[in-house]
Length: 360
Image (cartoon, rainbow, N blue to C red; front, side, top):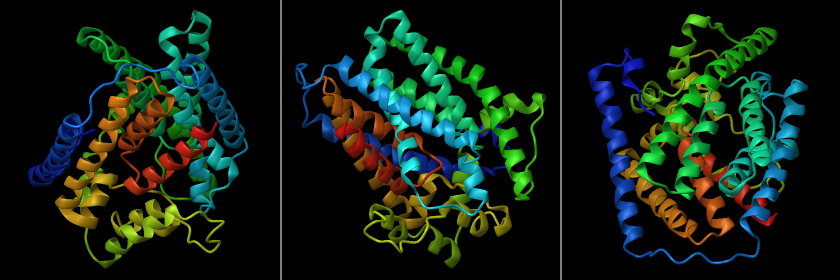
């Protein structure tokens, strides 16, 4: 999401390059959508092995268990930010389980909400708020807001309605993000400040109540991060973003016990932003910036094309009522909205979630 009004420090040339990169990606996305629409036709809804209610209930159960594991880990001092400033760690079983919480809850919510009873809807809302809340416990301020946005977009994609009704949904979602996002931003920042202070990691500034609205909106603005990536260069930066190192993520650690730990965000902090290594903080250049550094505007264009083909194919098949198609659509949206990660890292997580949730 690009909000230049909250990025006053960007020069006109920097902002122009940002919009050029985004426009090239959107061009590829549009071409991919048109390509798929010419070869796919909506089929009538068919019955699947599990009804939407049964599949949705199962996914909500999985998401609730993963959420519980996430809450226990965060309460025990094992938050994502605390782990990061402690030097990082290998991805364990608990981390894999907690990574299933968001896709399972979003997919289950999308499957159940339209036909759910009032009691079931109350339970779903509670789970959504708990997930948003525990995301802020991580010490990172973006995941909670990204989760709420992805949830709303996924529902609209799977349950297309009239434009007027969609506008009401969008307005309600934005209001919810503001109401919930501001206290979550404050809480996450307090957590981050306390965790950093206890580890003597970096210079973490706390927030004031007056700055919360602007800071909440600023968390949605990726223009400065993308601009930093577009303007970066040099051997150290190229080594940090090298695509071959990212592709190693597809190899499970049990097949390669000596696989290096992927500390991409920390390396960006050092090579792109010039921060001391002692800060142990993860920065971002967005996955568009990462693609640009690896292959220029050509790779940006191709990524939009390929993602659109996958996404549009999944969105078209959602009409058939198949749970796996809805899961794929949700995971594709999750990849797209994970703006602060790398595209390969998000794809690896989505592929892993698809295998584990699809098997259940």
